[in-house]
Length: 550
Image (cartoon, rainbow, N blue to C red; front, side):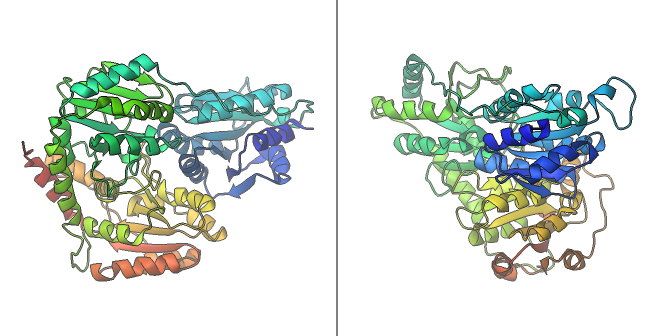
């Protein structure tokens, strides 16, 4: 068989189900081979960046890699932002790029550039297929690295002349990697430290949304009663209705939940990822006692210096803790600050649930209505902008991976293509993307992809005619902001041009009904909401006056 055919067989062998992308001349052989696949579906997109975001969403939701594809040169460079986003958000993914013939890679030549070197800083591994017989090992290694903790992206480049060569190699049977466990003696040490703590708290990161770790985390919390604060990407690791859920941290400003962290005499981190929320923001004087529990050793940082680390598969580690947690016995703890934190945040979340407004709608009200409409297993995908901060703070979850927020690389343009990817694997669930008017237009061309696929998604655009998050930050830091305003299309006409359903909501009293109607419509629907971003600075001012209760 040809090398290109072998590559497809190896991808099938590893369980790859979707490849998204824009092909070119240099991967024509691969595309011809892929056309014959009975288990891999190729989704033609309108831009390579959209392809990467679609594959990322599937990787984050399933824990199994999807792939994105581009040709050499501009096709590869168009992929890189989405690739970097997936890698830093710990999404398992493969990147497949074509390349010119290996006989001309050493010299100046049409569209030739060192794509592998470009991808190395934003992937876990990047390589070129230079020999047909190496394909099985390369694919097997790429998938293993992509799915190993912490998950990420691996890149495979196939030059056009190598793609045509014959090969007798066969795929390597996939085998799951060994899952390591921490030393039992370390488990006992952790219990000893926990036994002595009077005000312990859990800081949970995105490692807990993978491998069913949240199930064991909930068991741990049910027994100990210790409060849980989650990062943006760890939403739903514990049920928002649980008494020990203290909601979300990460605004990079002191918030209500910060009070519980301040009061803690021990911080236990589960799956904590420093790319989301840096320790100096919650441990500024570097004095906190910290226990680090994760699949990887702690990153070296002056404000994150754990006295003990449990390093191993997070699910197995939590299971080991749960197996002996009764050894703690009855412990007198002071969790009053944590109870006050939950009550105060609940008051914040409910404050505008019944707000009546017209013209522009408060972000808190929008999200209260969204939560009422969305089922527990539905999936909300946030883009990046001011709306992301409100979603992180005000949209609470009942299940892990029910809210996807880019919070490592933080690239705008994720939510629309991400929702298309999510709808492919969860066609029966409610899929909602929330975008700013800036981020939505960065990948607006994928509206055609959604229509072509008949994606059952709802995309909500928060309209403010500006780069709202930058306005917020500049105003907060300098007291004014630069010119960050822009015009917008006629949204309903735009939706009509792409064959979407569309609604514009300017009265808060009809928002829930409009959302229910949108989810009942077949195919993609656009919902435009003019948002009252005066609330941004009002939140900043209110939090600036925050005084933690003792």
